[in-house]
Image (cartoon, rainbow, N blue to C red):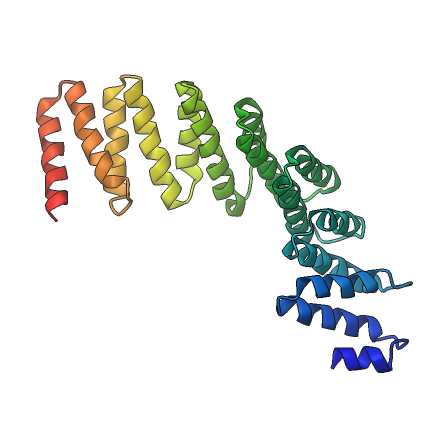
Length: 273
């Protein structure tokens, strides 16, 4: 239908909407390259209505991303960023452009995308999300100092509950970098942040790593408390069984042998069940 409209009424005022409809159908049908070609024609239309131009450019970013056209994705995002897009939609497009650049082995250019978004947006949630994306780039580069500086800065922005879980996850993996470098004090502080604000699965992981870090530091009683909490508060998690074992290990190394035996019994019962 849209092709017929364009063939017969290419000069009609609704032709732009028809081309957008055609591009959307092509995109939804998995023909992302064809969708991008239609959108290229549309966005170059003189005197295109601003709202339709924004919608077309947003879809063009997605179509080029799906087509694995990294340069095209970034180019479309740049145009979309200059057309007065809504903050949430601009963030989604920025993530596509950033991912395309990262996949091309250009993490520094990906970071520029997020930094430009930070400067351009006054939306707090968008700023938080952009900083988190920058933190992930630093984590991937194993730059613990930069990654920690970014997550610490982001926590100061008092993120909404919707983004706290994402920031908690990034904080956990910065903690992993610190732990791998034997910087237990910084690792522990980051794990505690992740445990406090993370989703349930991450809470269990972070609490387990708090216990493991304390065990490495010979803080046996504190380690035992962490492992006991994993076993009781996250009993269905895959780390619960190992936490029960390490609970006994912590008690034994603290020479609390009665508690160690009790923990070992609990682990044995769990294994039988």
